[in-house]
Amino acid sequence: MYIFGTDKEKHIIKLFRRGDASAMDCLYSEYADYLTAVCARYIPDDDELKDVLQESFIKIFSKIGEFNYRGNGSLRAWITRIVINESLQCIRKKKNSPIVNIEKEPPDIQDEEPEIGNLNEEVLTNMIRKLPDGYRTVFNLFVIEGKSHKEIAKILNIKADSSASQFHKAKKQLAKMIKDYRLKKE
Amino acid sequence: MKDQWINDIKDRIRDGNRKAPEGLLDDIKKEMERRGIAPTRSKKANTVSMWTLRSVIAIAAISLAFILYNYKNYYNNNDDIKIADNNKGKQVNEIEKKSEDDLLNYKKNGNIIQRISNEVKREIGLTPEDTDINKDASINKEALIAQETTTKEKDTSQKKTSSNKNYTERVYNDYKYEYHHSKNHDTEIRVSTYYSGIMNGYSNSQNGVMLANAYYYGDSSDKMINDNKYYAVYSNNELTTETKHHQSIKLGVSINYKINDRWSLQTGFTYSYLSSDFTINSRGEKNIKEQKLHYVGLPLSASYSIWHNNSINIYATAGGEAEKLVNGKAKTTYDANGTETYSTTENIKSNRLLFSTNAAAGIEYKADKSLSLYAEPGISYHFKNGSDITNIYTENPFNFNLNIGIRININK
Image 1 (cartoon, rainbow over the protein chains, first blue to last red):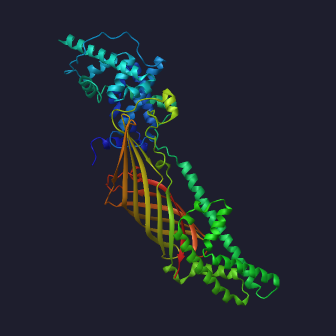
Image 2: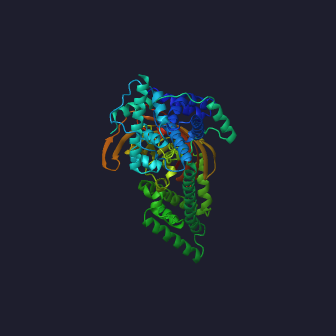
Image 3: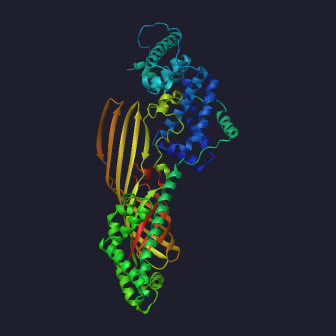
């Protein structure tokens, strides 16, 4: 029994193995929008976003022959990983130093949970994109990718404490953004 | 512990979509063309080393057979001198005595083949443990029986050669006659024992292939730990699995039924051992599943001899096999960041037969009348049987393999 989606991934891999001319188009049309969303969370600049996606797809297309299908979602996980890695490389190149923001503390607000309400994906993503590089990267890795601060510390070559503090600051700033947005709307 | 609102954000955006930049795919294609990159088609397989290893084994087997054959000829030649110059001169008698003593000594020790093969192995620098011949006691036993039969036949031949006829020539002719013109062709039965190995490197090198491009994260090597640029992220909060299939082992015994000079049928039984390791990573937690599967199979195949002479037979063979899982175990070890470790063992069962088809080219070297060695490089395809057991065949149903074996003639 196949869960929906399994056959799609298998089909794409088969096309590549066959050397089918439509293989690249098929993978692209299936995943381009999803990967753009992934990449956009890390890369706020649209020109850079395009460059990173281009490099990611070239890597995906040129290395897919080495990929082994491991069940439903494995292709998606693999290509996601490539996009995230490319995004991190892009941020690193720009920074030339560990990705930690030493900006002034975000305004101290009361530690109450902001109301997400009906804020949609686009609005939330755009808020995340407005976060400084360090906050944003740690936030994405910790919240979306489910990494621990210890793991993030290794990935970004920072201390585990720094990762935790960056996340704390990111959270504060994001909470403020959400509150401001809602106030503006009201 | 994350706040609820953070979790809400995650749920809302993690599987989101965003319109891809305009003209991105065209730009990608142009850039790939500019760099001369084409989408890869085939899997990267570590076949070279496996082929090398198998070739070495095949060459060693053929060499062993050759040396073994020549070694035996030495004794046959001594016998010739004894018979041809039966009553002539002291020197000849000495040779005769020597050869008789030698033969007697070997007979005393029982297993001539083993003695010879051990000496040969010493000559080529192998310890007895290094070869399959010695491992399998039953082969030696069969070889011994075959050898004794040959010795008896030789005694009979010796009596017949009182008319000074060259013994070697006689044996050679007898052999030739039997091989090409025997009335017993249709009842010729040969027993084979063989080892089969899958040559596709894929089975050996899957570990990390899935991660071939993406940077590996985790404590996998010192290089990666110390070199920060290798660190990156991979998870989309989904489980990721690495699979490593170890080299499978297949042993078989078969009976060869000769229909005519060209065609023959084979059947018998096989035993296969497949082991795989599955490592499932999630947020630093590791589940390692070690799976061990034992199969017993019933093969059936037909062979066609393309070309043969007295010592070499080149043939093609094709057939199918049904295999049944007789025993399967999976041991799973849970490792949560090195803090909690415990393991469970489960039995794996399946009533579905595993069907496969295969084709091979074979070369057989007849070391003597009753014993021959062969190597069969070939291809096999395992059909899906609908069971949920993952093994090397489900991962890669199409395989290259090499059978190496010994055949013993049991002619009526």
